[in-house]
Length: 107
Image: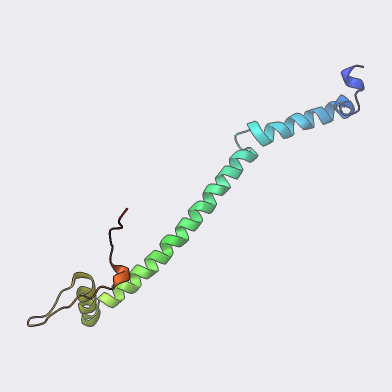
């Protein structure tokens, strides 16, 4: 039985179908604008867009922090909480809870 008489290969006897099949394979895999490259670029675009959204949220959060630090009360609160600063003649007590302490486990 020859290859051309096989039922699955019968449509490829037509030169137009053969050329179309070669064109489709070329465009999907080998061309500079192939489907594989487009798929990879679309994934990169999606990753960059999600990263952009993350950084926009971070910018909004930082802008809110800057607004609170612009007034005297907000700046004082930040300095007291983050850097444990105090006024003259003032005592600061740092309270740590048991669950917040790092303990060394005995093995």
